[in-house]
Length: 225
Image 1 (cartoon, rainbow, N blue to C red):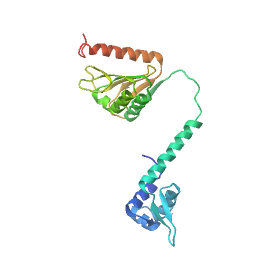
Image 2: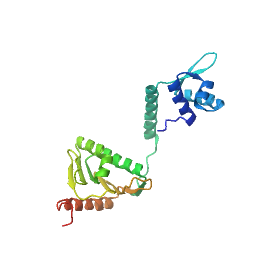
Image 3: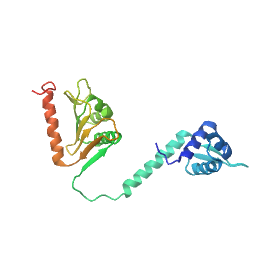
Image 4: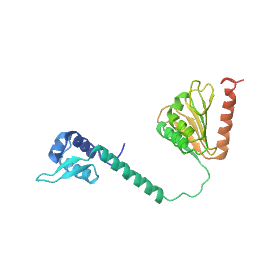
């Protein structure tokens, strides 16, 4: 996770936490960072709130306690994010685009955020493997009183959700939230995984019909009649 520290500053912070207070020479020796760079990085680390300066004949540094430093970073980031929300200009109304989301991690993040932001209902068509990525978010949606419908593999349990069982192979995913947004595509756990996200009404209706067909299929034991 990036906290605004350079590589040298991060190494020095860890060294200060491990060794206790040090001057520039000692810090350079402990980390292998060139002495001139160590002095500069220590001063910068102090400016960024990661170390305190101990004045004396030789200037020394001590790490800000980890809990305190992390709390300060989180508070700073919270303030930055709030400022972005306040000051970032609102986009002009647009036709609902088809957005391609690439990369396994980014797709899973989008899945989680869609479910977290749902206000009324969530429909998912996911295998047992993909359900695991968003299980916590689905159960939280149930706790929030939302209607949660899952079309998934046999043996999957989601307390409080409506579960339809079919022969669901890992990979293909479909999510509809509040009948207004859809995510569809395939996951393989790779950086080049790709999914389509949109609020386009015709696409939402198309995927909704697909999910209805899968629900109908579940009444035949997950096999075509």
